Image (cartoon, rainbow, N blue to C red):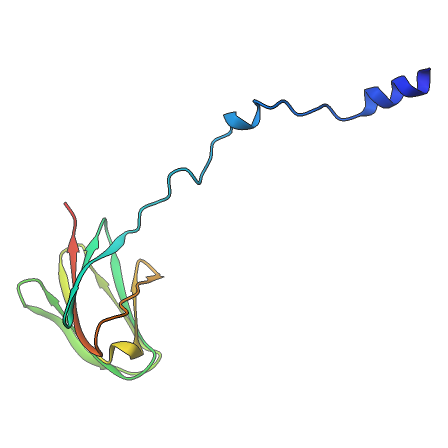
Length: 130
């Protein structure tokens, strides 16, 4: 009698099948990467930037870097020792020449960017899309 009725009333309501489909999903449209490797030819790579970007160069070992504008004007050139880092605003196209690429971590907007496949002495052109 009554005991069975009490249990039925205290049971949790059953889920309605259509309810879940009305919730927004975050996996349907992944955020596109800000940087994409366009090409690698010999010792030169071209990286396309899809928006405002800061390129970071962090030395794990001693390495040489030269940062220039696309017209060849040098912005900076130095030998980095392990543990030092440099950040470069890449709102305009830049070219980064690197000696000892295996000893350097290159990042775009605080995310590591993989340049595997390039030789130890390499040049990376960062260009803007659009």
